[in-house]
Image 1 (cartoon, one colour):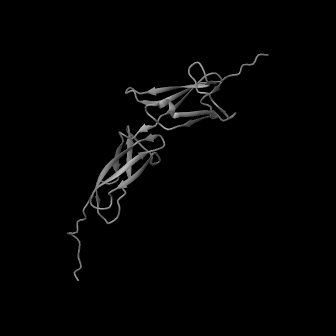
Image 2 (cartoon, helix red, strand yellow):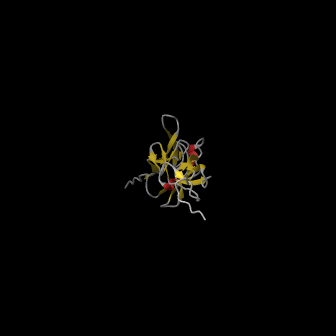
Image 3 (cartoon, one colour):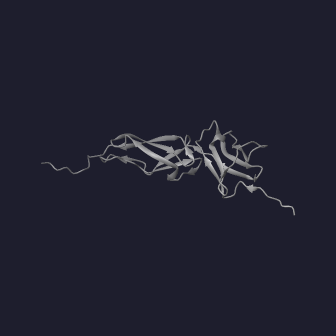
Length: 171
């Protein structure tokens, strides 16, 4: 009796991909390791002729890496696509209001962050505010996480409070 042992698909749910730190100049280093959790084996990274898998960068028309293909070989077959992190350098930040008035407390307006026409989830970035107490120009800095990297900032104006229309008590 002859048995044929079919290779396991690299897309199988038991294949775990561990991501490293994103570096646009070394995109393939983003895939830190690949593990078959069914047997605990760490797969061996190779090239098209050796190892359990090899990596190929996927680029767009501008030559930017948009993903990485993990291509199985030997005991593993198929291709698994991993999206690479996207830069926030071209992100657009919009605020919940068009203007803010001095109230004696810090303004921390809600922001919406858009990259390439896609509105990001709040889980994809953190925000930090500065100079946001007194009238003048305040800044919000957005820092990427969870598939986004880098940072960008935007400013908003805090207007002076108009006290000319308020009733004043004279003592």
